[in-house]
Length: 315
Image (cartoon, rainbow, N blue to C red; front, side, top):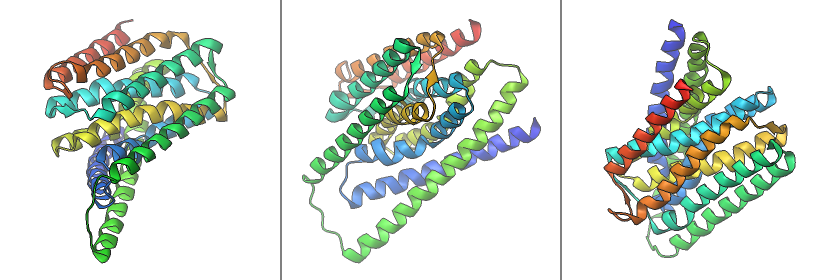
């Protein structure tokens, strides 16, 4: 028990250092290639910080723990929206770009609804449905590349070739080191947190929606909060939205492709909370203060998450 607590602390340190390096490297790449930070957040950062979810869900699917494979993703997406984005907004109001409020947030809501429909239609995710999710993921990546090229055409910056090469190499190394730190730190925290949770005889579903969900979301938590503190709100919001879309389309898609996932219909409550939270996020940019998620909005999200956790432990 004591060893698990020590390893959790070490994992937190790796997560904090890894997130800091990843944000710096991603911002550097965005500037050197004239790519908007929102695109970097939606791709490199979101995929890198979703590695723990990918590892846990695929392993759970292979071991036959469908509750854990799906619960980890639903719980992580709830944690990403309500806890992480809420906390980021409390630290510093998050600014919504036009593309974020018109395209990316509705995309996130749509893929969440699609996953819920798939789960309730046949009592799980079949291999055919998993292929559909992966096709949608390919379309999403295509969208981010298109938006990146579109924005890049509007920027003209002259950079010396030698200086550019050196900086790009350094930034790529930072990104790779950051992802490694996040992956190792996430594994240490999750694995040992589960050991602690098992000590108290919690159910598989409760563990997946709380300890596993929050544990695998720690990279997103540290990355988005770090980005918010540094004033990189594009990365903070892009990381959350991109990670949620990646979790549903790619991680569930790959997990169900390996082995079909059986659905526990009690997750409909958690899905409903996730969909309502996504709808609220879609409304935030259109109410005062417009185009921003204020500190008050962040507090609302945190209160919803606290209420959700209380319901989980009470019922």
